[in-house]
Length: 416
Image (cartoon, rainbow, N blue to C red):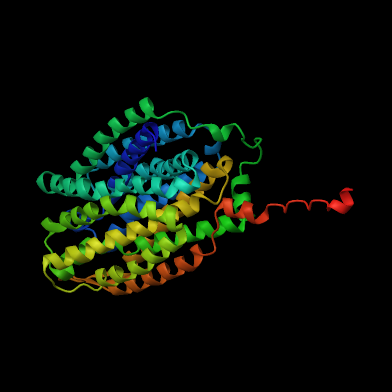
């Protein structure tokens, strides 16, 4: 990996850092937002899902035109809009306007993830892609280690508005980095398909079973992921007796661990195979998912041990899947496909948050009931994702499978 590729990954990781921070900070703020804004778990689930569902819709719409433009320009446009939406969250005075601001942020944020993945996939060949994805995933780790604890401290010290203002401020600097240092990403335009029916993105997916399987895998895995996550902090506070002031430790410890494990998982996936590595981490993730959703009062170190394991295995299963899904489509259609994929992931995230909010119930004493039901649903979805991943094949393997056999050479007798 040369210096130019490292710089690109650094900037894209910075994009992901702010993008992930904007979404992640909502969940640990759950107890504070529910108390200050006088909202219930269902309303909080709506606040979380408002961003995700809007992002899903915008990502879906963008799929019909993004492959016609330089990926850098699309990313920069979407990122500037996202920063404006994040500043709007910082200015929201009440629950209703906060939800509206989340919708605005999601409108542009939905395009970001797909473009980042498309740029990585266009830059790194399949054999090196998982390692690049692993480095990219360190943005999640850094958001957990530095971003969330800092955001929670700012919220506790000043107001819940301040973390969003801080994210927006960092976003301005990142937008300058994109404009200044990211080279045009337009090789896919050299072999672009003739302009025709914009719905060809959808028809191509529907006519390609392998792409349909990849999308289904993304949907199922994200639902298994986010049906539990929004209510981790509320359940720790209400059920375990965990102090709100210590919530940042969960993200600090988990993020610190994944800083080291994410690049390692990417390297192993490139060497040993994406699917086998995914299966290992998916199966391992069943353990902390059950523990997280069935916690009882316990010492702080026990909670941190369980949550740390949760971060490692959940992050570990996402890295090979991202490489698998990005490998099912040719570069000329990758931007559109990844936008549809991002759309389905965002919608799945939003639906999962709504489902989780509909299942759990907050008692008058502050306990979160039926969270274990959410855990069992998550485990079933994870098991289903293992089966789905086994049926998704990268484009390179498909080409090898359908490659014509070499013509038989004439025998010496015939030649003579």
